[in-house]
Image 1 (cartoon, rainbow, N blue to C red):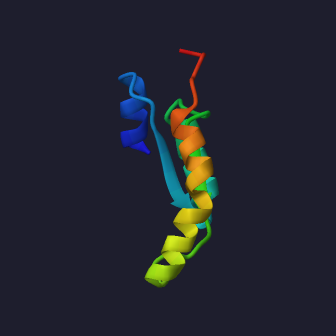
Image 2: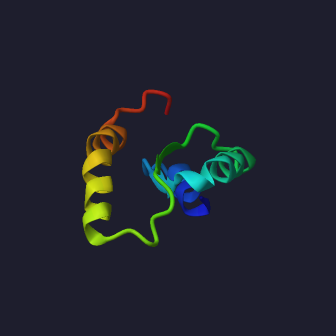
Amino acid sequence: MHDIVDLETRGIPSMFIASSEFRQAAIAQSVALGMPDVQRMFVPHPIQDRTDAEMAAYADQAFDELLGMITAVDTTH
């Protein structure tokens, strides 16, 4: 999260992806670091035991949303 906040502070649009298990912690940390609205995406948990095929399916499932998030124009800055 610190890296994302650093990039955003320097004007580099950023986001992070984490597994759903870390949703509350990630949101709390982004709030604590002063970036409550940082772009974020959560994927199903756990990921460490997934096969390559399962990880590819996760990536395929998340791709359109991820692409939309990283290409969205931020009009608040």
